[in-house]
Length: 397
Image (cartoon, rainbow, N blue to C red; front, side, top):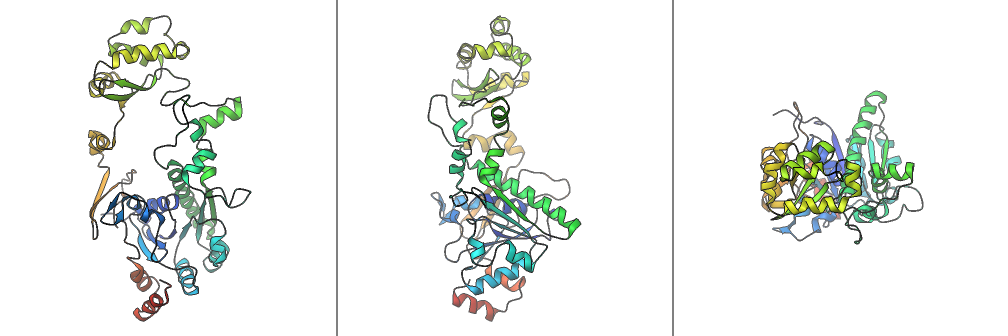
């Protein structure tokens, strides 16, 4: 099997919770050696985020911590700080998402570690930024979804706002950070120097508003909640069928004609009230009512079998079982599986990118707390068993 794209790169991972942990996991999937630094006896917050638990291990932890080694170090102790400095001199990247100022208090911030390793790429992930009046705010995904505008445009019209079903702000931040790290490593090839990267959930969330932000900034348009519907295209939303909901995207006038044919009501396409998309937007409620009158006569799968061959974008709104049983999801082999020494079989959703020469791979299952402490101190730093035993006795590891 080919080595990963990032084989030979070492990442020192203080990426607690989601954004930082997801970023380092992506790098690990690509072949980087990721050393996850955790607090002795406690570990990453997601280790306690359950139920569900699998033989005492939180299923949540599994989703962002594969392809990592767990090393427990107390960074409040001088001996622990010395370990981190030594590891930093042997690492290419450090990822951290402590509150701003925490690492500086223990002598492990950018200024401290770049002094001992000028080639280090140091990525800080925060909730609200490393400077400014909001820098001290707790940066959890759902809070930033609210402050950053996403929650205000999510949900059904005339209903309370809702959060997105998964921590998308965290995930987007992790992806921005991963891209920034790779760009900084590329720049290092030319300059020989590392650099500090700052990325916050708030900045990423605001940047991710894309067309909504552009419409407000350039046209003064205040958005509203549309549920699954689209403000500018009709029909383009979820519809009830005989056995649940499906999504249909009649994104242009040609597809509207095809949809009417597939629904068995070709006369709707010729109705002078509905010929153009602009007319359909103006008559939104009537169009939706007429389309749904037809859709409730068959099941989601029956309609998919009729509409999809006509080129109409559509699909059932699936639950998790239906998602992972979907023939295309199964064809794409979206699950990685391995045998964990404590929980038994573990399945994780695979890295979604395919490389022709250096495929991403599941090399290490999500680690037990401190599972690799001795090995990393011995093999990376050259510590003797006596030194390791002494550090453990002192509580530094």
